[in-house]
Image: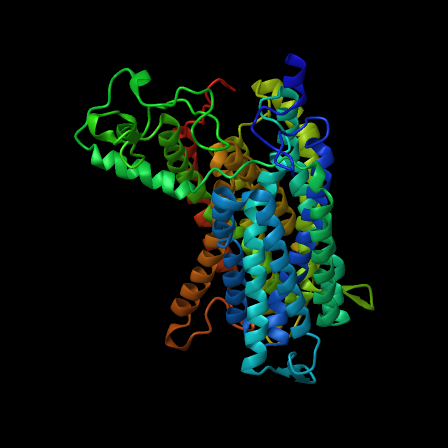
Length: 569
């Protein structure tokens, strides 16, 4: 019997045929190779059309700096809000595998329509020289394609990292250590796709044409779909646990119904099912925690909790169900602290690109590098730091801290927040120097000043370094700290920081433009940046990042890590 137990996983996962997952035939790095390949191609598609989007909006759709920048951040923000839809569908009904599969196909159709809108006469704008004349119908088709992609990515983003982590059994000590490495290599694969997108694809878009520039990402997305389905027999699948939002609502309603009920001092008297597993499909039991005690009322059993012979779930909830809600509430302050960081990150596709447009983009006498391609240095930074962190920093930190992962996930995220402050300071200093060259030499009306675009490399490199600490730490943190049956929703919650960061960037740009253009002034971010003060915008973000980090220190000190019953780690 013991030998039989060792054959199958103990975390409740099943294979594609809904049978208990065989440890040797499913999961681990064998299954992850398909997931990482899928993610690499999908991110190539996403960044291939998103990295240079601001230039497409300016060149093909005739939009100014502020309008183009805001359209990019609004779309990008939507790409990180739609994961709430995908996560709910995955956790409540379809599971992560089928959610990824269905939304990937929607994504591919969106990429195909985008390619058609930039290549077929009648759908693509007609141009006279450098000036294009898009019709309202052409603009509408373009944005329909763009937001189909936003919907498609909403089903993939919250599920794919959690689906990869599901391939490692948390109850197995060896596999649990591998899972921590998975998140680093997952982010590494993302940036391999981004590297190709920001270098090769951006160059194709600016020098060959937008039809090829969007067509190649569409093909990459098709390959991503094939990669994903090819690994089906090797995957471990977590069963959907029902609607997490319903369970949360039940705890809140039950707590308020028992407003006058006293919670017993002995917490073992709180209601919990007698079985080893919780009554939530695919979820282990959670130990009681002392914080947010008000919601413990939902687990106090009274005479009115029964409907005939069954328990009323809107009056009595298990300790595990109560702890699910507590876990989500504890995550919210950490979640909020990531919004400012995401705002800083979003500048790479907007203000950094616009700043680069004003600089000398030549590499030698004949080759000109598109300003959006400078994001490849962010990607190279991630590709450099991800394995360095996993293979060098973690083992060294482990010797000093004694922790299995070297740093706690909260410490890792905090380090990234500090680095992001220096990224904005670096961008601000560069803009000050650039403007001084403009002022001294009267270069106000030059399209590009004689200052190499490669002076932007440090700001991109620092953002990439910050990503490895904050974004990867965030992915791991929200997976680990989420209740088992809410992991897709938790991953989606972490992604919404990027959405709100993009929306905050839009709000800041709009507010700054409105305030600084009063009384006929050009403002900080005019269409001619040589006559503006983009450096002031970077200083504003640096100050907001510093204040955010100070608040984060208090949040991290307050946070209590989740405890799974029977698993003290």
